[in-house]
Amino acid sequence: PSSMTKIEEYAFRNCFKLANINLPSSIESIGSGAFSSCSSIVEVVIPSSLRYIEGICFFECKSLEKVVIPFSVASIKANSFEGCSALKEIIIPPSVVSIERYAFYNCASLEKVALFCTISSIAESVFDKCTSLKEIKIPKTVSEIRNHAFFQCSSLSRVLISSPLKSIEKCAFAGCSSLGEIYIPNSSVEISISAFPEKTKVLKGKEKCFIC
Image: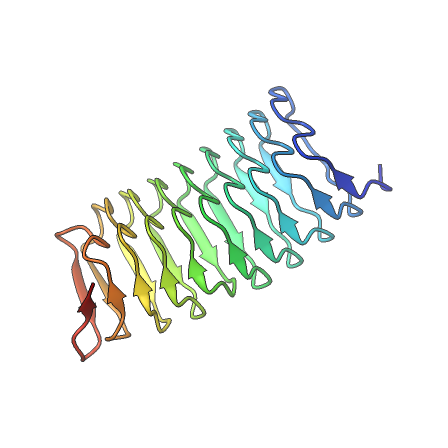
């Protein structure tokens, strides 16, 4: 109903036959795990009244192919879309200031990620095991790429960095077997010794990069 403002935690968890959801514009809160393991949902349009996508909200919605995130959303919580194995594309609007760890973990069909957001870090394992992801452009606002952020993204062949990165943590790009080289503008960035595959050529600014 149009008067509904909240969907409780785990309200529709394991509703395997639920294929269509129509979220009214009055919705202000969707609880953690509300639609987790709803394996027949194909498309979700987040209403513009929502500010947060809570943790494990769409966890293992294995048929979910399309998600529309409005400009009202400020944060995507941990494991929100983990295991959404049919999701092919995601566009993160500028309103988003936080994407928490494991948000898109093991989204195996995810080919395109558009980060128009103003996040300060790429969180731990946020795109871990997104094996179909081919290219990623790091927003200018990002100062750190956390551990395992793109771990085992085996199709990732192009990473565009224009931000003044301060650190790239352990295994951030480990297992990215298609990543031949990467250019990092900031010469003083701290890079963990295990951040990249051994064969990946790291090109950087004029000064020596500190390998921690």
